[in-house]
Length: 115
Length: 117
Image (cartoon, rainbow over all chains, first blue to last red; front, side, top):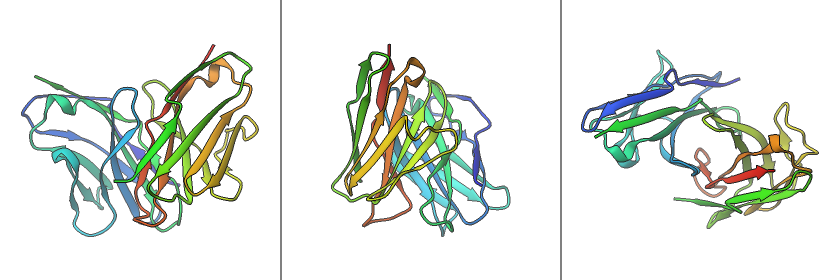
């Protein structure tokens, strides 16, 4: 079974400051890791993914995430936050060795960037 | 990137009626589609996995007779909420993987907000 933990319900950061949204995962095989963002009353938009290769992955809108196998983490980061980054962020995982398995999501972290 | 559409975006119905939600993959073929449900301020909960040409696989606790899924083609899956009740009010989101492209990424539709009165 796979699971995702996002320990923070809410993250507040001042505009221009770096931001981090935390995610840890549990999966029996190879982790395929994803970050999605959701704006109010909208579906999910794909930000970035880690499948294999370089542990630091870069995605949309200046976001990046670092895969850390020993800590089973995949924290989302951005060097300089924008007010428009305020949204709900979901980390997701699936077992890459188990064929066509669906994504399992964390509970989400609400990011609020204050001007 | 790949686009997934849903229709309708919002529906209000009376208790006891049935509601059909369509999910379409645009410009790509999706052998597998997924249906999720999201309650306010909560995460996405997988309801079922929809496979083209075969029966859907439902998650534990999801009533297959209440949430009918039909994946009739490689670009269309439908979710029918039968005899809807107020507790079925929720945000329903479908997702699909591109059969011809990278299999890792799931693309999500914009969601359908269902309100049962």
